[in-house]
Amino acid sequence: MADAVFYDGETARRRTVSLKIGASSLDLHEGDDWIASWPTGAVRRREAASGVLRLMLEGGPALARLDVTDPGDQASIRAHCARLELGEPKERTGRIIFWSALAAVSLTLCVVFLLPIVAERLTPLIPLSVERRLGTAVDNQVKFIFGGKVCDGTRGLAALETLSARLRASTDVGMETHIAVLESKIPNAIALPGGRIYLFKGLLDQAESADEVAGVLAHEMGHAAHRDSLRSLIQSGGASYLLGLLFGDVSGGGAVVIATQLLIDSAHSREAETAADAFAAQAMLALGRPPKAMGLLLKRIEGNEKKLPAFLSTHPVTDQRLKSLEQQAPAHTGEPLLSEEEWRALKEICKTS
View 1: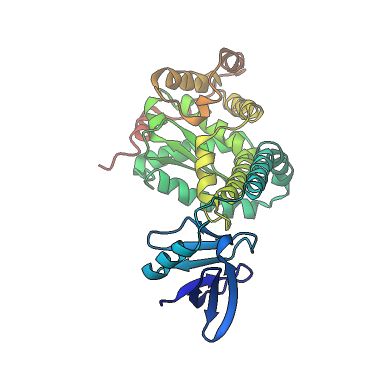
View 2: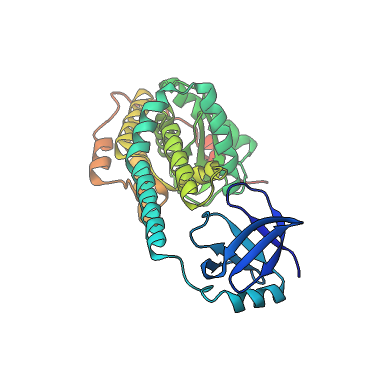
């Protein structure tokens, strides 16, 4: 008679036991010590890996189980335990379904209603140093998702720094910002927690002027100034952690990865987008450049793309949004943000030769 493996349902201890199978009971022994006797009429089979006969005792501890692998023992158990294949008791199954459904509903309500409130209240309390560390973790994930290639053409970098410096001088973000171009065909731009801003090559390719790019960058600087990305990360990270609990990731180990993907795939609230538009408009007006340039670029992307990037798919460039940008004209016309030569260099920042 081969040994079987027994868990008593109260501890995590794995106990190797021998079996004595009779007409009325299934007796478990650990060495010379008697462990338990299970009435054959109360023994039930549960799902297990191939080749394993997993048994549980109806009315016994919920987590107690016996795994039998010896074919002879399995045949003897099937011969003596006439009620082996009965399903889970209906009352118990109903309780499990009820409490599982209640847990799912509770987590869903937390994700939909509670987390946005928590994120809104918590964001202003988080120090910038902590936000920068969170931003570094998200930055690593963003580079992994999009291939990790940051464009580094020398002349293009110089032009990008010139444009970035003029935008920084025209407004107050409240934190140090780092702007880079990510080599991705997706026409997008994103602000990460801590002041890192990425302009995607796909968006740069569709831009027709430095003003258009400057407007988008100023918009993302607005998100950084209002800490919108941190707020979204707290909300999406909490959501991914709670959903992880629901589906078995009790450690929350995938929270940063999932939260980063949610941050990329989702857009900010309509209020956050409107505030970022206003921030960008003020920055452009301070430079004597037209805010409507950003709207023209986004409208062009909206018309060219079959699948819109996240920052347009849920918050499209509506006529009202475009009209608001067009109505704001600078009192005086400032000098071009980039020379023609600098603009060409910026457009070619991802070229390797």
